[in-house]
Amino acid sequence: MATDTPAFEPSLTDEILTLVGVESAPCTHEVTRPGIRAFARAAGYRDRVYYHADEAKRRGYRDLPAPPGHLGFPAYDPEQSDYLLSWPLDPNAPVNHPFSPVQSIHTELLAGSLDLEYIDPDICAGDVLISRTKLEDIRERYSKALNGPMVIQTTATTFKRDDAPVAVYRFTLIGYTPVEGT
Image (tube, rainbow, N blue to C red; front, side):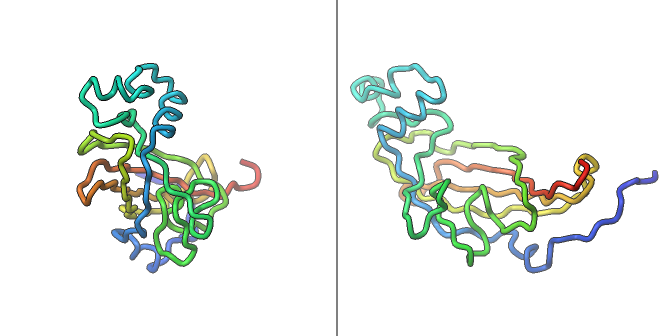
């Protein structure tokens, strides 16, 4: 079977490829009542359990439960955090947060896929979660639609409470540079 994929100059170096399996520095996420309420409201959850602590406790929760998809917010540090995403961003670190794991030569980024697996869904206001992002895979492919190469990075961010995993967030990020005329 013939392939019509043109040859392209790969951008992934051996140095980048050795980062597969490398973890980022830890990131602290605070699960707060205002954060839970804001996330629940933005996601359209109307159940009182996300808004009223007395209702949450009546239903057996320690405090307001985190709605599905909410794992708190990264604690912002103006000296160490990404300005927009709050995650620590160290330009010298080999692996950073899931939305920018490895520096890309490409100018555009596109979310590929997202999967959130709960190990212990009992996450409530007052919890502090520590996350680390690990680069699981990085590869380069030619895209006919883009008429050029794209780099696909897959990360797994594990969230822990008291050193016990509570969730794993898997994310695929696609980097590309638009080619004139596409």
